[in-house]
Amino acid sequence: MDSRKLGKSDVRITSLGLGTVPLAGFRTKASYRDFEAVVEASFQGGVRHFDCAPMYGFGKAEYYLGHAVRELGIRDDVVVSTKVGRVLKPASRVQPKETAYGIDWVDPLPFLDIYDYTYDGIMRSFEDSQQRLALDYIDVLLVHDVGRAWHGNDAGIYHEQLRDSGYKALEELRGSGAVSAIGLGVNETESVVQVAREFDLDCALIAGRYTLLNHEPLVADFAELQHRNVSVIAGGVFNSGILATGTKGGEMTYDYQSVPSDVVKKVAAIEAVCAKHGVGLAAAAIEFVGMHPAVASVVLGAQNVAQAEQNIRAAASEAPQEFWAELKQQGLLPENAPTRSRIGTGDSAL
Image (cartoon, rainbow, N blue to C red; front, side, top):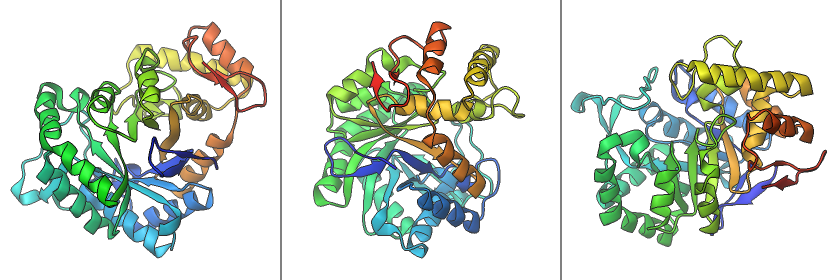
């Protein structure tokens, strides 16, 4: 599996990474045994990047992932990323928050999160993560959900915390070698561009904003991130489900909500082109995002070994140039979207 460098850092990640949201109790309970099995299957399939966050299962993803990489003896061979911006507190002392995406974790650890992007908050979050992971260093540290997509009208408050003292904490952690690369983990591109203009970012994990259904970053954001040498790690390439299940896959979701009728219609049109060219919808969703030169890696989640192996197979496939050309001809993709330019090659063209 290809590996690519993150911005100006020395960190290299594989073109496919494993996200741990599904393994932290998203919609269904997952045991440690399930978690370790998926990590092992992903590693055997060539994946060398594993992403987690304090938010995922309120500490469970970090707790399980750290134990898994030690038990499997693979710590020195993998890149681990986690996030700051949330500090976990005992659930008995914190009120649950209403969030933009309304995730209810199944059997989480007994904690709830509070937002804190200050110097002290970031240092506390980082140290807590180290203890849950039981790792003496963390490869990639991402500032989680700082922006309007998550915080709405309160976004300015948290951005000011980051600007006033949070950047100092991030620079100290990177400068000391406690982390090797710094980035954001968000559901929007605008906040990445804003922070990149103020702070020297290496990367950004952006979920659901560049997919077969969403093309806004093509307007200017990805170009600016490339100019600033900020690598994109793309998450949410299935828009939380619809681009994996398709329109006939049972329960459909779009960005963790019910699927709007216009999105169902567009996905059905893409499915028809997929069927004509013998291309899997999920494979097309992964490949489309990975073809953009700003994207260093695509991160996919899996709830079990079968899903992990399915993701690896899908990520290895290549659709013919005619497939991408027809999507553009039908107006399902913009003309300036990078796609394969020659049959049977890895070349892309803007």
